[in-house]
Length: 118
Length: 113
Image (cartoon, rainbow over all chains, first blue to last red; front, top):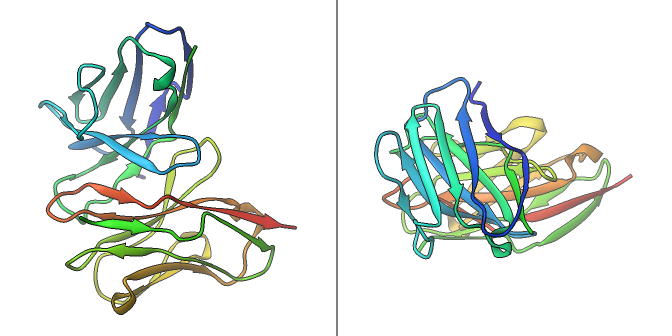
């Protein structure tokens, strides 16, 4: 149980284009989903928290107009990188939590999406 | 502010040897602590977690971790490492007042045959 999927697993795009990444909880309803970014050989940095049916909460320094997050249902959240540039190349990982509002709620992580912007 | 430190960036052990990965946290109250493993190009898999109770926590794949409040540590151990354990290991703490995870910088484990 508690499986989270991401699609696509890898994407290569040209500079200036937009890319959408999907995160799905396959066997549970996720009230809260989280988006992380991981640079090579570094840890995960939380970008934003999304709650179903409401606006995402972005971490300091994350451009909300560049990284659009939509949590349209209890099993799907999307991250759209708009007007992507080479510096946006990274590994993007989502996680989902059945509850999400207490410290004891475990987050289940997706397999990640490798974005390369040429 | 809460923080997590993993002092060892790289660790190399021989297959069959014991393993200990260090994790220290900075937190005012009782921390909620996690260990995750990440294989190359993959997401994170939960190994174990500590919320309260017994300070020695058993996890999957033969891993265990011990919470030591006096040392602000939550070290991960395995008595006998397998080649398939080679991966990146992350310690995390849930930050106070929220549900946000704060990750350490990770320890990359290499296993020699």
